[in-house]
Amino acid sequence: MPTSSSFEKLCREADRKKKKANRAAKREKANGGAKPETPAAPPPSIEELEAAAGDLVSCHDILGRFGAEVESTGLVGETNNAKILYLALTSRLFERPVSIAIKGVSSVGKSFTVEQVLKFFPPAAYFVRTGMSERAIIYSTEDYRHRFIIIFEAAGMNSDMVSYLIRTLLSEGRVVYEVVEKTKEGLRPRRIEKEGPTGLITTTTAPKLHPENETRLLSLGETVGAVEACAERGAGEISLAALAQKMKLDKSAVHHRVRKAIERGFLVNHEEKRAMPARIATADPLPDEIEILPAPEALGDRCSVEVQMEGIKKEEAEEAEESEVGPGPLLPPDPLFNTSTPPVSSAPFYDPGPIPDCLRRAPPGGNSPLACRTTTTPGSRN
Image 1 (cartoon, rainbow, N blue to C red):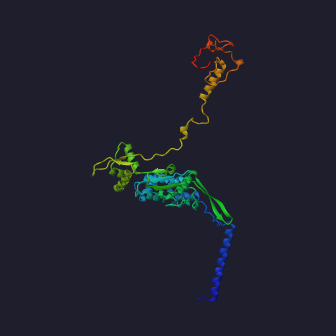
Image 2: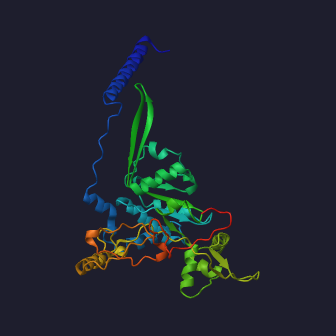
Image 3: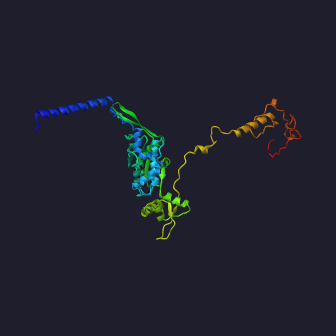
């Protein structure tokens, strides 16, 4: 049982901790509710960076060196895709990072490829999510500047709101969102800004993503590309064994990929007999990249501001030539059209010619012998 002196000591210790907590709360309130910032660690010096890089500083083929290292981790047959992912993740340091969607059938190692490549980058270069709510991009505490969002399945961003926010972050380099919050002073708007630039890496089994997302992502595929490469060299068709050797994969894994690609219409097996080696060839081509705007070189002199005025100048020259020759002969007005009669002072008198006798008015008190005759019926009055 503790003595009175030890009990008083415990009470004083508890009071001291409580006072310390109250002082910290007052300081936090004085700073507007923000916690005191800890000083950031100084950036590493050039000498420290050179020591950490080692012989990579003088390496003339860093990408080839990376390919050999990533294969040593157990990645087989996806070295080209791994190199592209490495370059894309390195582009986070630029103002326009390159985003990538890895497409392929299920259970072929898409996520494993991404995981192996991420081991060559510091955690500050990316953050991984398997899914997110509609407005998680806005309220997340992650810093998006010069980082990559890794979503292992594109189904994790199937929500229209999530897809829209990610597209905006990729294309505009920032997200600005305003929300109304309930405070002690009533409803007040709060503006949330998330700065980029930010890149995205995702995987999917679908041949095509949302059209708006397709224009912002570089699509990677290995199986169909290998078959197309053989077709371009004149082979046209390739067997499963040759395709497995080219891709450096097990034959069963290649068979699984080819079967899924045939189901989606990308490949076709020309061998119709059973128990015969397959003859794989390309069927429908993969979706091409959509060109939204032409390249500046393709525009050439098609600027709409400084259009050529040849046609207009030619018409003006013809009008000036006609004005120099003078007006042509004045023709009488056409009675079928509502045209104005020219003034007498500016046109010569027009003589319509002699009037027919039958149209002449008879003089008062007599009938003209040349007047037009009319027929009468009996019983009618003249």
